[in-house]
Length: 329
Ligand code: DP6
Image (spheres, helix red, strand yellow):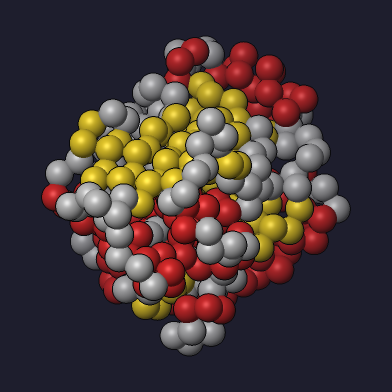
């Protein structure tokens, strides 16, 4: 519903094919490299924002439960960016529902901050476009920058400390034969958050020195492959990029890893499928779940093989998703 000072949006999560791993400016969430993702339809957040002139304080309700001081403060600080832009200071009530299939245990900060930015823009009638909103979303969580667009999206790292130069842009609508199978290995909260893990890798891993130039090479190669709808080249580059990120994480001091035994089982299945002529590739983020990049037309065969080692409710197919959509009453 979108009336005076009230607006609702749905935003979808995204999975990076060329990863963001490391900041050059912590407070502004400015990344050390550009990155590239695919927005997915299966995982999203619905958020309603309502500014209430007569309310006493900000309220944040997540999945039906009113949140405590810490999370509410995080939301308040983010909404402050919009209150400053609008030149007003009305208290806000934010109501969010995360639609991540039960047991998915996937990070929802990307869809959460993209939905919140879109709904703040709607509620305050600011008329900002998605590129401008991606700059706001970035300041909630880096990966949220890319959820302001659908399909394949690039997040430009930008220049120096210039916040305005670090935004997202859609490069391809992904309306071709590509999708992801998300393999749920473990639904628990990740042990080392991406925020902490990427800072530790940047500061202690000798391999991190190579990361920015590897990302640049991978981006330069994957963009034309996406434009050419060259599925195999896209998958090969994405898998190699993810492995380079995880290798540099492993070389941190003290060392850590997001891999779990079943992550390796899933990776071995992907290799086996490739040997049988079904092109599919692996990517992983700051947790043990494995995302298999596959052709949508071959997903049934991929799932059939995974069902030998995983339960059906651990396997979720996602198709390319869209930019945030306005939810009307
Ligand atoms: C491995 O966006 O969660 O998923 O900016 O600190 O909130 P913050 O981190 P976050 O990091 C995502 C890391 C990643 C790779 C990616 O999405 O590009």
